[in-house]
Image 1 (cartoon, rainbow, N blue to C red):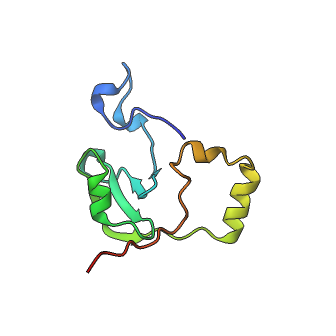
Image 2: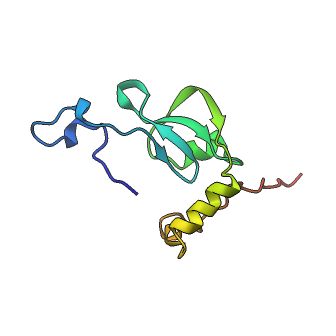
Length: 112
């Protein structure tokens, strides 16, 4: 997890400019975002499998810009999952990710 002041001009330390900031992506439990929206606004690039745009809007405290084409995030390969296990054998990332959600969310059935 990396923290940053982001692209908020009011948070810039004296002597810094927005062009000094270089945040390329934010990966949440809902999707992948970048800062390619108007005036560096956070922009949704892809939704994780099983996540809806309404879920993102309902769980985000600001208006999220949308990429021209919002794709579905690729599911991690077995090799990538093995690498995560090797890098984090004690599953410490689960402290940062609520319930360390699986790569694919089950689709909730609605009552008919």
